[in-house]
Amino acid sequence: MSLRNDFLWGASTSAYQVEGASAEDGKGPSVQDVKTLVQGTADFTVSSDHYHRFDEDIALMAKMGLKAYRFSIAWTRIYPKGDGPVNEKGLRHYSQVIDTCLLHGITPIVTIYHFDLPAALLDAGGWKNRATADAYVRYAQTLFQRFGDRVKYWLTINEQNMMTLCGNAVGTLEEGEDACRTLYQQNHHMFLAQARAMSLCHAMVQDAHIGPAPNICSIYPRTCAPEDILAAQDFEALRNWLYLDMTVHGEYNPIAWNILRKKGIEPVILPEDREVLKAAKPDFIALNYYNTITVQAPGSNAKQENAADQQTGTTETGFYEGIRNPYLGRTRFGWEIDPVGFRTTLREVYERYRLPLLITENGLGDEDAVDENGEIDDENRIAYLSDHIVQMQRAVEDGVDVLGYCPWSALDLVSTHEGIRKRYGFIYVNRTDEEVLDLRRIPKKSFYWYRDVIRSGGIRK
Image (cartoon, rainbow, N blue to C red; front, side, top):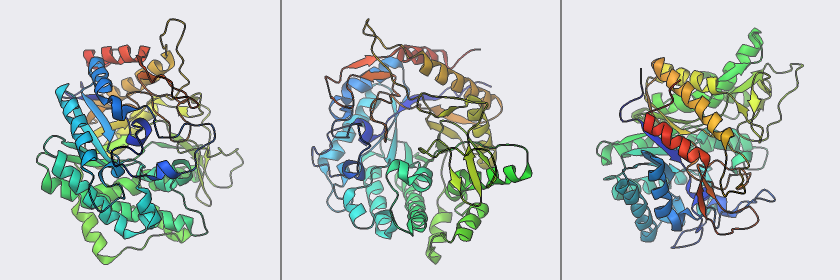
């Protein structure tokens, strides 16, 4: 089986990580603008200056042969305070971005919310306040009204599971003894916001396609001991199925719910919530994939993995403990590399839900540098992406319906907690964490390699 004729070969970015112009043209501050940064990393005031250079950047994407560009809209460019008066300058900007994509034959895939909650809403209680869900729905409605004639692919919330499970890594964790309960109440309100937005999109946008964009991966048990297998199932339920069961079926995964109940952190659900959640139906499942995770039964003797960020080991006391997989290599930044796990993940998700899958992130963060010839030789990235594309193609041969592949990222951007030095892009941006420099764009070796992959319709092996 080959890939679809209309397969969406693309690449991805997010607004706060790539745009810059953090206080221009009426934009209000988001949580990313006001958070405490990791020492030595760039802030988001300039980022990669995509806000001013989108024409140049999209022209380069077209030269690379992209069929799709997945980007996010900054909530605070549309509603500077999260709600209230709309900012027409922000709407005009994204209208121009969308039109530029279409001019180059690139399908826009729009993420409504990507980690950048308006700071004013955070001050009013953030996602633990149900009013934030109302504000999100009004914001989504505005996007559907203004852009629905041209945008047909929509993503509701980027990595909702990471905002809940790894709030310390992405800046959403609150302090206090009720922090975990608060996180799962926030999570429930995000479920409601997403469900209402999906239903609204189908009512407002002709030929709309909308779905979630969680971070999903296969979970391995350390051994074939039954206790390790139970631990892997518990983590899989809490990391993956809690979010996808809710999106597809409109109900909580029973194993995940039981874990929340046993820990006393289950959210409050109002009677009317269930009807809202049940009514929403996604058209596809988007997912971000970087690596798999291995866990063991709690109390095992094997050394646990330290949870540094959202892609490394994690532990839930009494249920599972994260551990390093000795069969997998690692990136320079410590993330395990598992192309075959990409195939198993796609198979698991498709077999469970039978909805088309759209890959919205997959990529290698590395410390790229310009050589004496003014070029960037990123063979490590080419090898990583090549291995993953081959496994994606094998998943398609297995019977998985994949809509497209949009790796992270189209161009270098400021990583959420590791700065610009952790580069993912096909296009190099000339700046460092310490200096903005001239922001010159330089296609990397992977740029030309990916162009050839797209031209050939995949990798032939």
